[in-house]
Amino acid sequence: MRLTPIFLIAVFFSNCTVYDNNLDNPNDNEANEELGVFPPSVVFFPKEQTKTISDTVSVGAYAVFSDTSIVPFSGAHLNIKYDNSLLEIDSIAPGWIGPGSITDSNKTTPLFTYVEDQGILDIYAYYLSISDISIDSLTHIAEIWFKPKSVGSSIISYDTSECQLIKFDETIIPINGTREASIIIQ
Image (cartoon, rainbow, N blue to C red):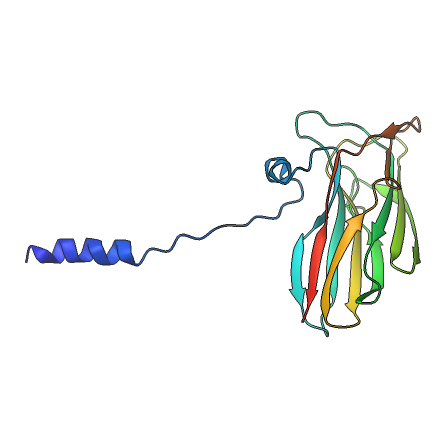
């Protein structure tokens, strides 16, 4: 009878599994800083995906600011590079910009356009508002859907020499870091 509690405790502790929780929030400044990505930064979400050749790959493009020192801005130009031998752009949509979604009651409306040419995607998004001249939040600039063309792995990255975050007075906000996205097509 005395062995039963000891046996139960031994079974309980021998069957415990500790999981490594790998979170992938683009606004997690602490996790980004561990990767050497300091705000203001431009990041992708999710940072890793494994898909089949018949799947659609969805990647969000974000501008991230420090939660303690938010810089107001009015526009963005993102220069995104991807392997066009493995991926082709299916569609692109504006993300939510500012205090709410572009479809919500806040009426946050971006001027949104893009140009795609042989593995380089340039996205231009500018905040338009009657009452505010800038925004100061995590910003989902765009959502990009890719169609896989063949099996392999691809990195989607920003060329920060071409990317810009722009204040309402047309001054440039320096981008201090980037985070790539890794896509594996099986």
